[in-house]
Image 1 (cartoon, helix red, strand yellow):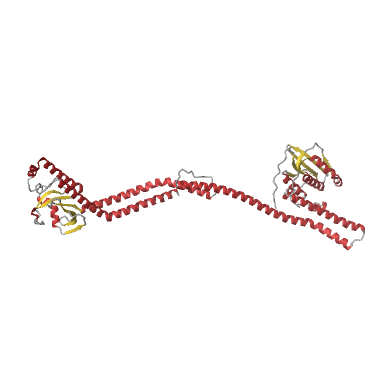
Image 2 (cartoon, helix red, strand yellow):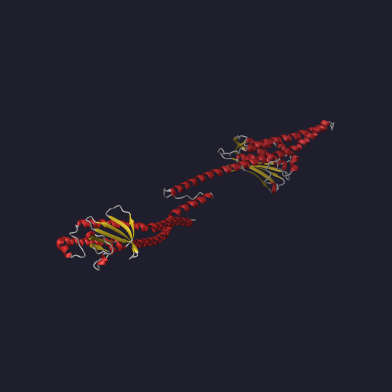
Length: 542
């Protein structure tokens, strides 16, 4: 891209130069000759004015004329040293005019004022003659060549002039087979002047000038193209740099910035791109944050929908059996299937037992819902967990006797923790109930409270069958049951461990389960530091 842009810019500038020069060449070809001729006309007029001025200054008149037929000594004798100097000055000036302007000059006086033609061409007195040569003494015919060519020519074309003292004409001279520009005029004292210049020399000069201009055009174009390649580099490098930055921006890479060094349009563009890059980077960051938040909210919404569906399905499943039993035994009572008192009491006991199970299930589901959705306000207290566990175990002593389980709980010194007393008690109760329902083998249940740094670990172990590894991560899910038949037997709902999970996550604590060689141990931790704990923010799932 860099080279391409440089070449395009250089080629454009070169084309501009070439077009300009080609137009100049065409203009020269069509108008340069006429311009030269016009300039030569001005040269002839200027020469005429200078000669006329010299003629008047040195006062060359009929009495003081200098003739090629007369004796120059007469002129010198009559005018003395000044005359000699004047004559030499005029002769030198005439020669300079002739040589410098490439013109031929003839000053003459017509004898007896007769009309002169090619037969009487010698009936005039030549004052000065200069044809561009230093020698004028060859023959008398050569001195009259300017006049003779004019007189003998018939092809003449007048050139417009504003003066009455002279006339300009274009004359084709057959003898020379070429055209001349003639100025024929009268001097102030009545003498005559004839000045001519060759048109062929003008055309030759114009041709040479055009050729030279063409060569110069070619050379200048080549040099211009090379120069433009280097000059355009300083511009294209900045543009290419901006292009690379823009390409990176299109791929969301906003690291590179343009180094602004000038205050021109490119500098302003670079500054604008830097500002745009910073704005886009900031905006995209905000959009990403908003997108993450939106994604999280959508996931939560999907999760909530799935939880609602699962909740309805599980609740329907859990309530289906007790409702069917209540309905069946109620219909039996209504139809008096058994009239004896013992049967009616049995029917009523079943109905009350199933109704009690449904009541417990509904209560646990409501508690779990409040904990998971953060609608229940935590009442954080600093309390002794050892004393709390002792009270729970003391109240459940009859249950241990019914299950024929041996309780082991070593009484230790008080351990103060931070937490919601009600939720912590319910979590421990769920662990204890789970241990009582699954105790087997040696039928031992062991409760421990250990303090490690600023954490207190509460664990409940029961002997019995370990949990299968494929189920160990699923037991915290609502309504999940490893052994559905046994769970149904003791009236488990599959919600207790879910309450523990929701409670610990609400308090920002850890929990878990581990299989031992002869049983299973459930545990959770509580904050045992002396500082008020910072609870995690509840997630609003509404």
